[in-house]
Image (cartoon, rainbow, N blue to C red; front, top):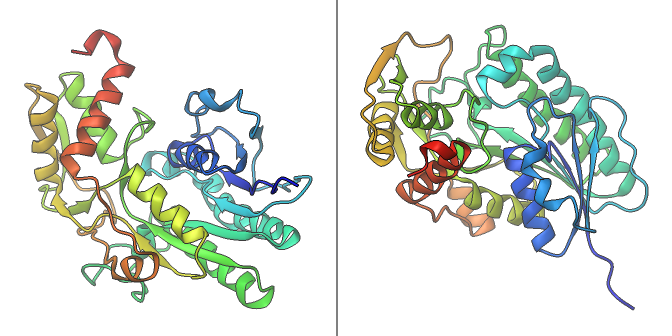
Length: 319
């Protein structure tokens, strides 16, 4: 008798990361139920999967009840606006998907006796006073600032996840994702990687906020997806940081994009947004130890692939 394929539910499955996770679990021989309300997700990200008999898509807001017939082995909750542009445009939806969406997906995992993984974020550390950031750091967050709708939604989601793990014995896990980039990011996403690439490819000046000395760490999507797959199959609950510890100033990154995009664009400076973190660098010692995971793709390699993908979105500009 043939062994049953594992069944994976991915919320936010038509988004940047969710679609790549769908690819990964299908490649691993699983069946994937993709759920997305398409506020920030895009059907183009999963159009290559629609004829796959092991893939199903449902347009649904997971802040409302989730109904799935049959068994479920893994539930991965990735539904949420994730860029400042999005969560400032959709503040209530962001709070609801972090609270009600987390409650509903945990309820599904409890009902189906499935493993559960919540996509939390480095934003739970806020504008950190500890550098680099370790999982035992509680963070420095402004709960009533404009970014608080995202930061606190994720912090609540972590607390709810651990409550379900302790009280209902759900095999629930938390990852904290640091800046991740790659193909399928939305052109007008609002985050630094698509912003700079879009500006460079269109001959516009690159917008650097503040003096450009604030730092970020950039993890290529394939490395992150591998870490997520290892985490959901592990026996660890987390939280575990997943990100690339190589740290760059925004100004360094802007200059690298200008060079790699071969553009005559220049850098312009604007005032720093409220509560924008000054530093962001993951300590990934725990991921190395528990998951035997660390990023492999260097920034120049991943950025070249990402720029090429963006060029394909502008056929007239492709060299």
